[in-house]
Amino acid sequence: MRKLTVLLATVLVAACTAAPSWKPAGDRILTTWGESLDPAHVHAEYPRPQMVRETWKSLNGFWKYAIVPQEEQNPVCDSTILVPFCVESALSGVGKRVSNKEALWYETVFSVPNSWRKGGVMLNFEAVDWYAEIYVNGHSVGTHSGGYTHFGFDIAPYLKKGKEQLLRVKVTDATDTDFQPCGKQVTVPRGIWYTPVTGIWQSVWMEPVPSVHITDYEAVADPESGSFSITVNCAGNEDLDTTVEVEVLSADGTRVATAITTPGEPVVAAVPDPQLWTPDTPYLYGLRLSLRQGKDEVDQVTGYAAMRSVSMVVDKDGYKRLGLNGKPIFHYGPLDQGWWPDGLYTAPSDEALKYDIQKTKDFGYNMIRKHIKIEPRRWYYWCDVLGVMVWQDMPCIAHNKKGQWDEWTYGGEDYEVPERAKENYYREWGEIIAQNKVSPCIVVWVPFNEGWGQFDTEQVVAFTHDLDPTRLINPASGGNHRHCGDILDSHNYPMPKMKLRSNGEVIDVLGEYGGIGWPVEGHLWQADKNWGYVKYTSGEEVLAEYERFAEMLKGIIKEGVAGAVYTQTTDVEVEVNGLMTYDRKVIKMDEPRLRDINQRVIQSMQE
Image (cartoon, rainbow, N blue to C red; front, top):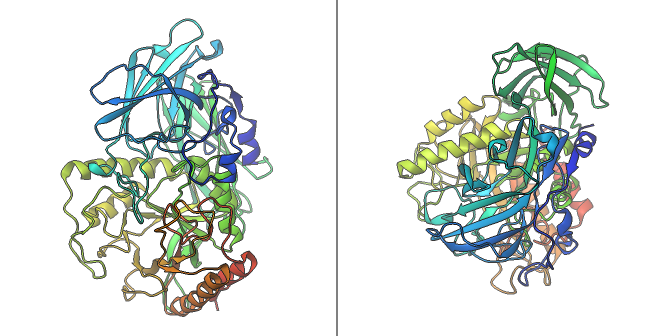
């Protein structure tokens, strides 16, 4: 039902720069989707499946760009870039770096249908890394800082008469030379640190909105009572008699519950015979939200929700476990970094974006740890649809690689972080949680990884809990462990081993292990200096070691370990420890045997 709704959304073709001759930049390996990419139809799917309006317009495609010193204003943009691929990527057609003293300028021409000019026109950016200044027809319409969250502006006041409108975007990006969250991006890629990403890296699009319109919603499920608590937020003048009708729909589109509320006020909608969302049965209810002023409907969006709850539970042996719908479930999945050899942060297509998630399911896992990167909203949509639980990391801020923390003890010192870095972290992490908690697949928030830039852990955990008390918090995956949050997360390479246990204080998990490497010739980012935590020369050897580790893992599961994360989904640049090669063309282990091993690991907790 949800997939059909998204596909039925009306797509209007953007009037972007005319198509030039185009080919991927550089000579790195490409995915199959990158090799067959049609630049005239790049990421043409509706970008926001969690909240759909029928009428919208994609601005993805060929734009003009220029890289100039930061102080230069209004440069001539006379080179071509394919949006939404970052300028450093092959699929952008550019493949150039932008220093922390330079600015990347974009320019495109677009049109607005006459029927849109009766209300607001939202110009939406799904993600731009890192600081963006937006200009329409020479007017500054707003700025945004942060590389991982969507933002938008009502540009109706800045539109001129006639068909053509001019959009310019200025981007600056310090990457790892300043305080901003940058995850694995560095100016000097090496080892586990990768090529930087600058500028637009997710879809740009527009939609018409009425003067009073829905901005977002939250649907909190209570499986015990079979009900949703739904809050719908709006923007604009609500002085008139403004109400929201909430309709809950079954998977076949039949209305099963309805309620009336006012913007910002939660309302409870009970559904008969509630269907639970689990990795085995990822049932999604549809939502239809209608905003009315008096008797007039002024806005309507469709979304979805899942009847599922997340909690800490205690099993029959007294161990604290990760709970889904009140029952213990072993969380097992790969460390998924979300990088692509041809698009870097950006998957070549929606099909490619879905592929990694589908293969994770095919391999027999039920969870993904999304590692210090935030994905497009369509990625979470596919996890919701396919039934994959997600541990969501916060991208780490630039940090001292030596660290000022004691990795495997309780109470080690937090890192000394400048105040402006802390303030920015709270702002960006708050936006990430607020924007993504609508996706039921996310079950665990992970504020810090391995002590990288870790600060004020107790306060950050409290901040995270206040923003979203419905999910569990893993304070520091493999990092500086403090007496807070719901989870103690230990890392060990290569074999599955817990370096530290909480002794029943919280849930114990193995947040990273494995890293079994195999550099597959013809599918490498570079020919030499590739590495894994351990390296082999064939898929048979990799699978044998993987199965040996799985037997060890089952042993510590019996001792109370509640979840485990294997490194990793794919090779990434010079790392060759993926389940698949970086170009996704080779699955390194026999898939049916891998699935059987993983299913036996998950089931072992119940034996």
